[in-house]
Image 1 (tube, one colour):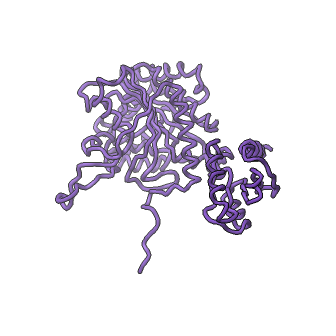
Image 2 (image 1 turned 45 degrees about the horizontal axis):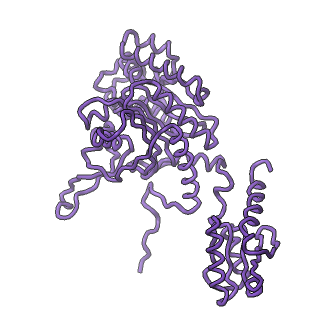
Image 3 (image 1 turned 180 degrees about the vertical axis):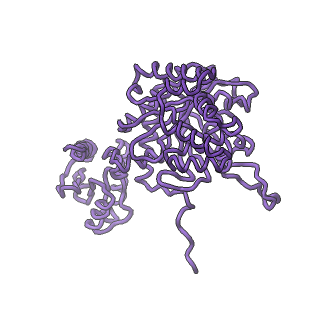
Length: 450
């Protein structure tokens, strides 16, 4: 019989224990920071009605939605009625519209769940991946943007990042620059999708795509030149001229920078008028996290005052930021940023089985130690002690407990340090303190610089 394919679907991954431990660590840090800023947790279904998602992400985004065929008798029709979540922002907008009467005036939520996109897989880019979103609903104040920048900055610094930048721009400035370059209003959205790829495909690649999207070559050249130059804000205002919306955008950017000046994001936020995020629902400030040596960003966001109104029928101010968990994990892994304790074994101690007669006492010992918050694995069958110690070492378990008939008679247990080979006999009640003390010394010795 032919063996079946065992690899996961392209762009999807299995998460082995080490992967899950690292992911849980990052999620815990992110959640802790967001809660300190007053954000509450929210979860939404993996599947949404197809009409909930379509028309919210622009032309390119809509093509990346994973659609689900109708089931049962209508499966053969090729019709779709459901889709996998593309992001966490549109489901949030639906939730706000559905539960508006139950939510506070200023609703602040964080959400960490997987999303799915029918994208081409690449380094740090997957078809199934986690997003870590934080959003504030109900206020047009630039305090919201400043708080989001501060929260994201605190998250990244708590994870060990220092060399990141939160790039900041405004949708109205982008619109003004496109108009000044001669791009017709009907092609603005399409042009921004292309410009969003400037860091990935370069100026020539963006220029070619702009022409393919309907711009003449001279306009495409002006657009690429305007964004590639990364002009300072005063120069951009001069280029745009008397566009009142763009002028308001420039004022809002200055306000955000001033509000960030006294907080944890002060040294990380920078204006960058070349920043262009392609999602069509942004209406104001846009933000993106950049780190050296990474094609793409660790996350981004912006203000989207019109999105909830598509569900509710009235405009509701909203602003949010999304961190890409997978890219954070990739960069942290490549840079060796995880604390040594994250990669240690799943158990503090292995209880060896001396023989059949000692199994009940061994299980009782394991239960006692677990009740004292120790992580304990029991070797599942009596075997030569050398094999059991070899197994523990292969699992990076630092200690083994040996409970033979002599130890049981004395009310003691023998603890073997698998790193040094040393053995010590002691009363059972002393085991947790003994193992904890030696484990702390071991972890400190693993820390960089020791």
